[in-house]
Image (cartoon, rainbow, N blue to C red; front, top):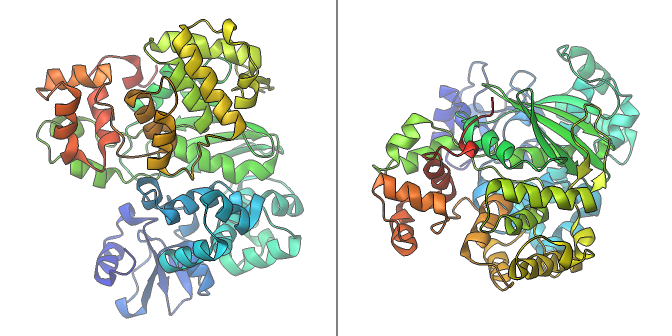
Length: 489
């Protein structure tokens, strides 16, 4: 979008927050870059230059605006709706892969050479993987500086910097302030200040309907791993350097996030996975506008716009839970999962009580005795085949997964039919166009709304909803009185 100057100028003049994250405005006369919705008086069009990423602005020598804080804007929806090389690379960078494994590790996960990855990112985003990771480190550093009382040296390494000098230089360059002054200017907020505990706000594009989003997570919560308490969804997180516990609370203009981490180096990854879990980088206006073109869906969208797709913080965990949920009720699936958690999950300490374990890793589940599983033999075979493939590395599910190829790998496993593959594609892989025409709730909603109820006919009818069929699924599910559709009281 940043190449369409006229459209960008209109967005800046109207201060349209919908475009935050789509592009950034760099002002030649001030050397500052802003988000499109910046509240200051817009500069003259001839003084505006548009970039596709904060990293590109920083590489061009621009500093972040202190008023609109463009580094904290929602991420671009592009990386959620695409599955090409650039989108997969951006999801991996957000997951901290460059900081942990370097550019060669990023390229290796994608199956391309480092040169190919760098060339494609430069062509589309105006910055290479190192610059994009640097911009993310700067944002993490600012968050820690402003919301914690941690020493600057500890913040530097927690944010992913290799040295304190690099940390100081980057903060000065990006924010035009040394770290100490950045902390002194920060608004005083009430929040956790002890090491490892953080309180922060997760922005999103409005509108956001929390009913089905948090309702689904709460209704399917696995005891010991997840819970709904005092208006918040809480769960344990398995992270690269340790583990964490997160509490997510819906508010009108943001999601309140409380994080307790065993290792602060996991902060960037934890935030990225929480945003992905709640689908916070989606563009609900574009999605709802497309779905409203169907006269059957239009009343559903008008009644409760802004529905998101409840996703996951761990793709392998969700695939296991999808198998446990085959042809059984939500309550039965939770019971099966809870037994596995108690027997094979890793114990954790929850300062607030209630959460007891991390969901079992595939390696732990691959070692269990299949005869101990209280399920039919055919599903037992499906379960053991899946966890063995995940544990051995024959099947990899992650943010970088190639959607079509992963679908083929899943369909090749015994007991994996279209419903299981599509629900994994929708909620674990993040495919916004995944569709569930054989789902019982979808077929029931189709009959009530006068849509075709056979899978083939409904799939043909749903072609008009593309590329947002996963969101259409949320609106169709919402016609039922199942607990997944309601925010818990």
